[in-house]
Amino acid sequence: MPDKKDITIEVLGQKYTIKTTADKNYINKVANHVNQTMEDLKATGMDSNTQQLRIAILACMNIADELFQQKDQKNIESELIDKIKSKTISLKEYVDQQISSFEKRDNIGK
Image 1 (cartoon, rainbow, N blue to C red):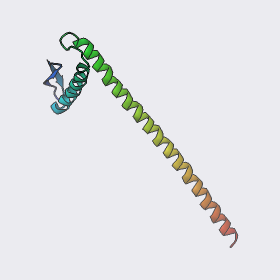
Image 2 (image 1 turned 180 degrees about the vertical axis):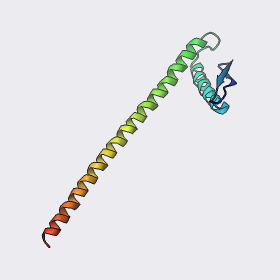
Image 3 (image 1 turned 90 degrees about the vertical axis):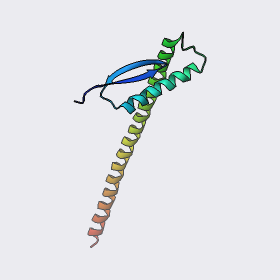
Image 4 (image 1 turned 90 degrees about the horizontal axis):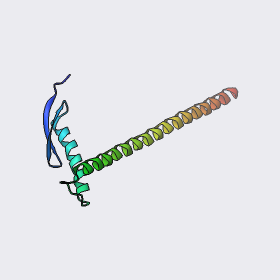
């Protein structure tokens, strides 16, 4: 198991130290996404000095929404792939039956 290391990030002007096995670039990418989501909320007029908790909760809600939308999209894609596979199998079986039928008909005429 990889050793955990301390990585310091800054979110909404506050520093946090995270103990993780993840790559520093990945953690910074996550922190940047969180910060961008919070900055988007601040841009609506929320005061980051007095409404930090509100900004954090709404950012969590927005990020969770993104996650659920992606999961729903993956489920839709997975269902579509399953339907295509099923139709492909049915089509292959139909073609095989037709070929077999033609072969039997040709053998009878010989």
